Length: 108
Image (spheres, rainbow, N blue to C red):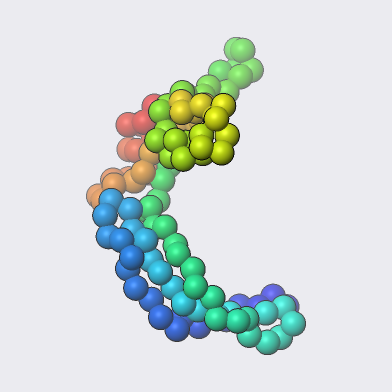
């Protein structure tokens, strides 16, 4: 049987902006039947999102968008050929009070 239990020893909010960063000190059950060492982990809470994969049955192709992603800037330090405009599926974050289908329509 898979381990299921965990214990949060300490929790704090490291950042509380548009995204949230939660900092945990925890341990969990192991497959061997014991407990893990105490672990320190950060969890980026970005909320829920909706993704749409548009499909064109005539050409039998999916449609991707090209979008600037500032997160790729840090990757360029290691991989200089990494583009800053990435091909990706259509997606958007569900804001407070929004329904997933409304986000899908907004983003397409």
